[in-house]
Image 1 (cartoon, rainbow over the protein chains, first blue to last red):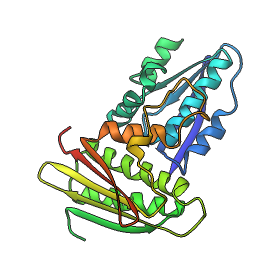
Image 2: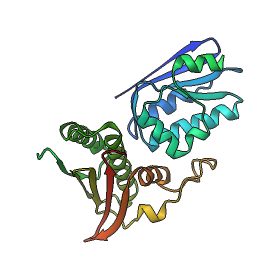
Image 3: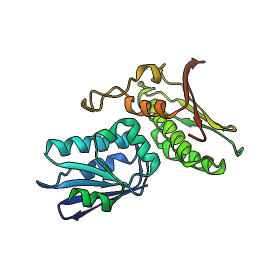
Image 4: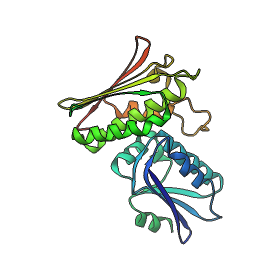
Length: 111
Length: 141
């Protein structure tokens, strides 16, 4: 119920997640994000087709954010549906992670 | 199955999560629940189910989890119960500290914080050897 792929747009490494991030699928994103891109890169998580995230999914995003920071990289997310955005707001993630409206807006801001 | 009601009993086994979520999705569709309360309901059931299975039965005994949802005129009423060890998630889970390490985080802290914040009413009781969580979500948040 989850589909993850990666594309590179200049210095931005875009990871697109489609489907549901819950306790049964979040380990797949965790494994995917364990590999940190090279210096000067920006990590963008495109969640436009993410229909659901639970605390298990948020933990993976938080872990990736901390890993990126410890490597001197920026991590941002984009394309949150209103219900996922609400979960980011309530969990406090919105104050820790830059959120962009769309991939286009994110790429414009990050490059 | 009544259109405005859902009643499921499951084993305390993580493999039951997917069929449970499918039942919830079918319910919110047939009961015509708007996306935001539908999401909040699904999140509550998901978080409580995971917490109960992961921490409620440390001796590995078989247990039973009961999920009951009813649509009223203006809200959703969820009653989630399990026969795991006594645990009041609402009194034992302060707002999580996101700056701390993930390992320092209290069990289920983030999930319960989300559920508590996104519900309009929540209550816990221990009744007949079961943890009973009663929640309400407004249909027009």
